[in-house]
Length: 457
Image (cartoon, rainbow, N blue to C red; front, top):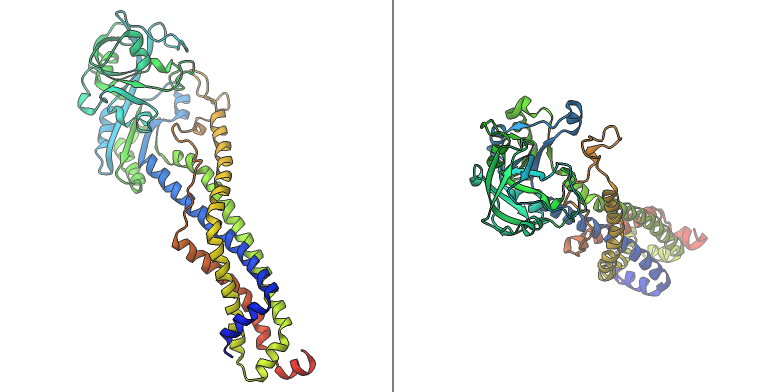
């Protein structure tokens, strides 16, 4: 009788041991498959997060440097434009801000936060391209009518206003509004290029400028700069965003931009936006590490249990092996029979595990991720910025810990079983089985048919 047929008869004759081995393999394969599926799902979610955030580098004020000099530094727009011409850059925008006042019958929204810029005063943000602002790119802000401000509008007097401010003053796209600069003397007539919606309530101040969100005004850099520098001085920028063609170009762009700007970057940081990605993917990394640890623990424990089962089987089948060896059977065939029995059981366990493991993994992984994401979101929501005019240093608040807006922790994953995952799990399961077989194989090689049949040893 060949060893393949003997393996089948042995599995059938020893149903109890076969079921125990099968159950052990089923637990191992299910846990390993769950670990593989969760790791694959989290990897896909992380890549999607990177794509959604995009290849971006932000130029912003160094909070520590601002605290040392007592005011926000600025950089000339010409320097930023030279950085924007680097080959890695696909699009870029920059912004500056100053206090502006509504005049000639127009008034601010007074329902909610009064603001800290005096009567009629609010924050005017001059931008090169409003469509590249993070709140518009993420979809948090919605352009209800009109068009975005672009580089082509740079020197024109055009603004975007929030819908509540538009409703209060009966304004619509194409209407004219008179704005006054911070000196309360220089005025300019601006055209409403568009009306947008900011979902934040008026009772919650805009965290950076501490004004009612309904009163935020975005205008062309040239138009608003003319209110602050009526003599035509160089435009001074406080922020810039560079969208790159490839995320792999971030460090190269950063190095070249620093060479171009030189000392003009004093007081500024050039940050790749990995902080947003890390904030979004933190819960994913947590459950991935947990799943990986559980997978390894179960695998090691399962391999130990299987080794004990196979070793026990060898002891229980010594007389059988003695008879076979006395009949001229080769020792390698006995070892191969053992390996075949383990492999068949492992294959069946992996096949059964593949039927229910994806659904259970989806449910368990989603539950675990939901808890991790809720905890991360709670931490984000509990962060409080320093009060107006404060850098936070005296209060023990590190602005570098400030959460990134529009980068909510990912709280959903999609588990998908692919052929490659089955191959990985099948290979792992069979590998564990063969490893467990190899340990007692040495005992088979030492068997002597005469001593087994005469002395039972």
